[in-house]
Image (cartoon, rainbow, N blue to C red; front, top):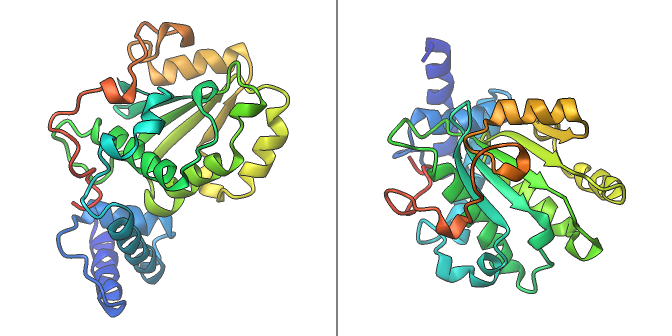
Length: 249
């Protein structure tokens, strides 16, 4: 790491301490994600980091969300983990036609944490964990109005922005129906510029071919032009099991 970066990390740690917390136990790569998310401004990065610590402590007091805590969301079989992309990022697919408004918003929020943690953890493979990113694929094929969940979409993206900084490599939106365009306009108002720049709406054959090329045939299911099968998140085995998603390292 460059000397200038080292200095920024040192200053960020000092700012964290001034806010009554500590960055001890967190590696420099983790702290760097917060710095990047706040345009390398140490004080703003420190504030974001401390807010994340408080949120994580309240939302995930045991270090991870277990499957037993989100049974209703898992039963829908709407999230799939496909392995690593061409860029070695874990690929998560969301089948929105299997999603319905959650009656239990707390369980839904825990589920978002569970799926993000497990997706990120699936890409570790013993490597440095601090810079792991993920690729999301939002499949809107065959959805109806009963599958449209504006609040759920906003929650998912805001969790990524606020509590998983620099974790999203790219999000592809596939097969958007005409009626969803107005929905997306509403959702996008809640997303920051950095997040919006990582979202690709695939709308023609050329863009679809580029999507397949970038993600990779080996991990994409046949229905997306690849060679793999869909693997539900609960059927994807982590080694070791999910205990901590690398956020605290």
